[in-house]
Amino acid sequence: MNSHTRTQVIDEVVAEIYEAYPEILERFGEAGKMRCLEDNHHHFDHLETAAKLDDPQVFINYAVWLTNLLTQRGMSKHHVIDNFQRIHDVLGKTATPDSEGYQKLLQAGIDAIK
Image (cartoon, rainbow, N blue to C red; front, top):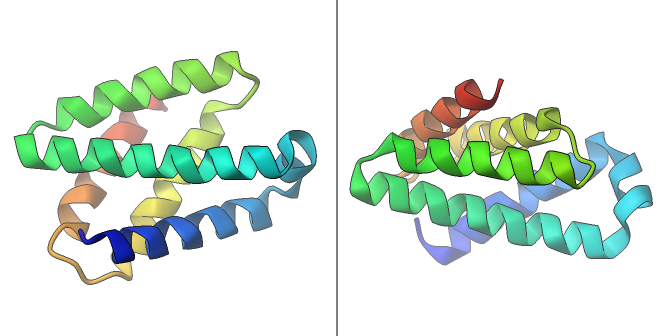
C-alpha cells in the first residue's frame, strides 16, 4: 500500500475513533490523539510485515502484545478490537491490492484478542 493511501486510511480511522469515543480526547488530550496516529502506523507496519512474510502469526503476536501493553496503560481490549475493526472496514472501501489480505490479518488479530 502506498504511503498516501495508508495515511488516508489512518486519518479516517482515527477521526472515527475520536468521534465515537470523545472521552478518549478528554482523558488523553491531543498528545493521545498523536499517539493514536502513531499506533495506527505501527499497526500497518505489522500488517505489511505479516503480509510480506505470508505469516498471520506475526500480526497475531503483535495484536496480543499490543493489547496487553495498552490494557496496562488504562485502555480496554475493546478499544484495540474497535480500532482493528475500523481499519478493516475502511480497507473494505479502499481498492488496493493489499486490502483483502490486510483485512484477513486484522480479523485474525481480532479473533486472538477477543
